[in-house]
Length: 333
Image (tube, rainbow, N blue to C red):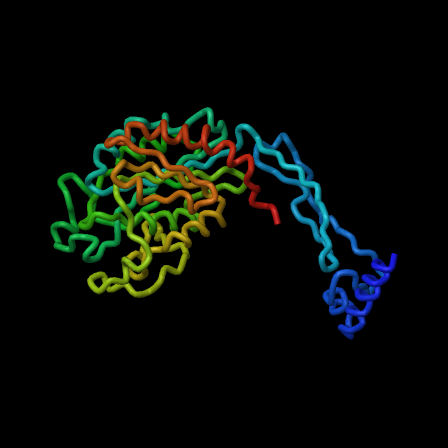
C-alpha cells in the first residue's frame, strides 16, 4: 500500500513539476498526467463497409482517428477482404536491344496467350519497350547507326509506351506484330528510366482498385543513378521523378536528366501499387535484387524468352499469392 501511494505521489509531483500551461503540454508531461476531464476515445470516420461483390482487395475501416495519453495503447479491429480473382492490369516492359530479337519474335507468337486466365478474368494488357539514352557512350551516334543500328531495326530510343493498357487482346496482338528491334552501344540498358515512366505516367492506363503487375524482361544489367553523370554523357541533372511522355508515348527527357536510383524505383512502385516481376536471363540474374522491394519476384528467362508465360504464372499465382493476401489495399490510411 505504501509503495502504491509513493508511486502516486511521484506521478502527481512530476505532473505538477512540469508546470504545464495547456492541456496538450500537461498530457505530454508523463504517464498519468491529466489536465482535461473529457474522456479520451477513438472516433471512426465515415468508412465504406466491405462489399464482397466487388472483386478487389478491401479493408474496413479505411480511416480511424484516435487520441492517446502518453504511454497508452489501444486495439483496433480491422476486416480485410482479398478476392481469389480480382481485376488485373498487366504491363509488359521489354528490352529492345538487338540481342533480344529472338525474344521479341517469340513474344509475337504468343499473342493472346499472354493473358493468363487463372490470374484474372477482368484484365487489361499493355506493352512498352526500352533501349537506352540516345547519347554517347550509351548509343552509337554515327548518322547511319542513328538511322538503323542493325539490319531491319528501328532508330535508337530510351522508352516508349507502345500499347497502353487495353482489354482488346486481338488489338494488342496486332499492334505487337508491327514492332521491330533497335540497338545501343554499351552493355547495360536504360530499363530504370522505363520503369519510372511506366510507374508515374497516367498514359499507361493503370486502373484504380486493380492489381498492377509490371513484367520487366531483359538479358542485360542496368544503368542506375550517376551513370548518366559521367563526363562523356555530360548529364548532370538528377531525375525529377516526373512523367515526360510526348503524344507518341516516347520519353523525351532521357538525355536531359540522370537515371533513377534503386531506392527511388522502390518508393515510386510502392506509391503506385505496382508489383514488378523481373524476367531476366542467367547472365543478368544477380543484378536484380528483388529483396529491396516489398512485393516482387524474379524468374530466369530462357535465351529466347520462350518461358516468359511460365515465369508470369509461377510468380503471380504461386509465389505472389500469399504476399498479396498480406498486403494493404491503397486506400488504407
